[in-house]
Amino acid sequence: MAYPGFGAYGGYSGQMPGMQMTVGQPIPGAVPNMPHGGYSGYSAYSGTYSAAADPMWTYFAAIAGQDGEVDAEELQRCLTQSGISGTYSPFSLETCRIMISLMDRDYTGKMGFNEFKELWAALNAWKQNFMMIDQDRSGTVELHELGQVIAAMGYRLSPQTLTAIVKRYSKNGKIFFDDYVACCVKLRALTDFFRRRDNMQQGYVNFVYDDFLQCTMAI
Image (cartoon, rainbow, N blue to C red; front, side, top):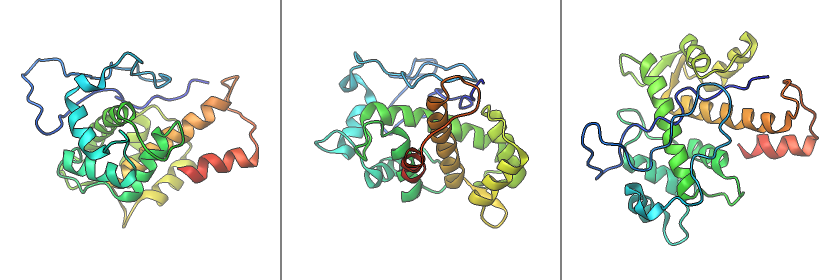
């Protein structure tokens, strides 16, 4: 079974405050483009990567403090100050908790700099997908449009599953940007959880109740 990718995941668009870039100049620390469909294994940054040389490091370090990591509240403040949400409402604390759980592979409840960079790239890709649908910049998309965005990211879901997702993330018949991002994060996290256990890549897995709860309750 070929598992979905994450749309234009890896496209590094936008800048942190204070970053002056010339048109056509490569963006420092940009994540290489990943092919549509399939998984990358999340190896966008190698062990030889120098965080101190990255223009985003100073900004991140000021939010993270001495431990070099951010928790959900610090991440919320960091993303709000960065302006990554643009004209849309800032991310809620709950959505930031979901983001932390997606990237927290060492189970510290926090996010390091490389994880933050990976999240930043994903957020930009998800934002671009959202803006393609939200052409009037209302900050919302219609219920049927969410299915189009999910399909554009490579997910092939049944109508019943799409209906359940829409009911979960819609408010008064609309899906707001914050809820859309929370949906994208959960889709990616749960798909990755399933994929790691699908050794034969057939779309079927067996896992124990405790394993199931560890994943679903943490997201």
